[in-house]
Length: 483
Image (cartoon, rainbow, N blue to C red; front, top):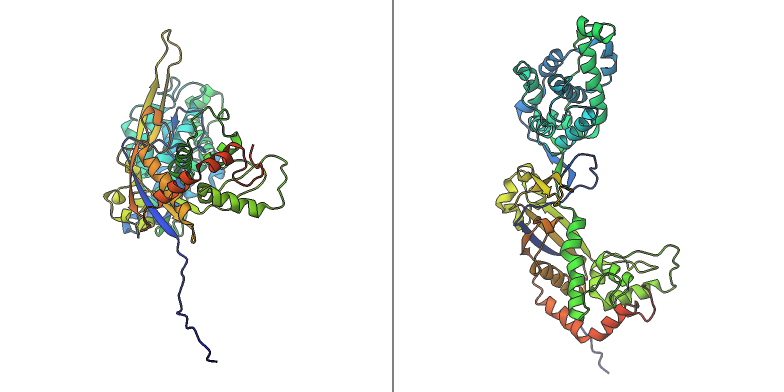
């Protein structure tokens, strides 16, 4: 009997991450505050994250020993407090010099602007830090600080020393700004001590204050060699950014839940008062929470796989039930403000060639002052300021799906994003006040056919079963897992 042989052709299978890119262009200014910056001022900043960026390597930006010696000689320290400055780095010294110059210019019995009264140093401390966070240079920092403190122009006799300190090499400016952001409290204390001790060098002032006359001032010294080691090659900047967490929720998770409710005919109701239990709403809307002390069932893996198969949007985004986690989501989200600082990160994307990719992120920032009107009897008026990205600013949102993502899950992503775009897309906060209204368009997406239609057909064909799984808290598993 003849033996039949079958030949197989070799096939190479390469698991690939699917990448979708969405460009969001601000039609109105974007408001996206930094929750980590909290103080008692009436001004809030745009969210920022530190980035390591290549620095411009220019001869003019290199710090010479002559520059260091010149600044130190022009800013002598009273001998009474010189020992306190022995362990202070040159960037810390320069930051202290600038704050001390502000005190010399504006500290008076009557005060100036907001720098008056018992709270003047608290106001200065908060505002100099906010100015340093948002300023790209020391000169810009000084302007922002003076505006925030509502003080007028200083006396002309201070111009040379002040401008010499404000126009040091760019790399050193960034180091000084970081000192003002991170060590603002100790810098203010050093500057205040320097300012008050220097006044005691006047015999008349010391006699009136009932204190001993302070000793003469002495110039300190620092070695410029190695002071900026590596900083002419790279520097750390806090760049305005729209967080991936905000993009994930606003662009995908929330519109995914709205789309599912519309497809299944679930009427809008007050949270927790509709046919869907709060725990079910939570797992779709924000990922849910595991109940304190909850005990996992023995078949967690099988339950999680069943839920992800029945509800593709949970396979896309993940979540937790009352007692267990569904596992890692298939979606990874990243976002970049399209600007010069992020251009290298955009390489390989169509966003790399956009005009906005050549504009500094700091040029896109703007300050807005808002007013809450007083009531008819004059109660409740409030004025506050905030930092925003200007209208026209662009954000690239990259949505990546892990290899082997099922077609229905891919369709759930497309449906969510297109629902977001169709429902009046907003980004960041305060949309009710006119901020964050954006227009979006696909920059890049796989050639995957009409996946949204396939997903919506699935929802229509299984409408009653899917509704029942949401309303009874079983999510199609036969066991109540959400309450």
